[in-house]
Image (cartoon, rainbow, N blue to C red):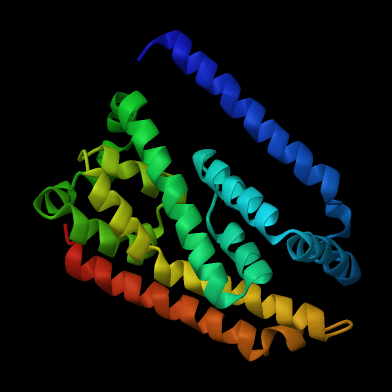
Length: 238
């Protein structure tokens, strides 16, 4: 790939990342993140924005998710926020569609412009299981997604299919279906936090921890880790 294009892309990436960080620190005082009242008031701003103009908020937040994924961001914090704002059902749909769109755009961009670099830097991570993806890329990438990527960071999960030149159609549907378990747990956690914050003046740590809306998603997370381990043993043996 042309070196000038790489430099231009790096500059655009840093500018976008800088704008997001600037917006975050302009709106959020990190010294107050241990203050329950502050968190409740800040979160209410988002809910008020959503209630005042639902369409504009949804479009803005959806675009933010896409940009966040393109900037190689983590999925879990966004899924929790989405659950907090939209609830479990609509939050899950919103997050899955946003993640899948962002992941697909990232995959296409990386495939056409950074294929050689990804092959060089990441191919060794799946050398021992590459033959599985070549045999049935949709099925094994679906299992890979459902298993949380085997502990591999979300951004790298999105780029690995470049190595075995996965079909875009298979990538989209494997991502849509495969992200549901992990995303649902995070969205449910966010929805539970919203209920607690809205219904309690000043909940203690144990009020939060022992709320069914919180401990059930946490149990689900532990179960998912165990399932991921056994799926890895069954389908991704060396």
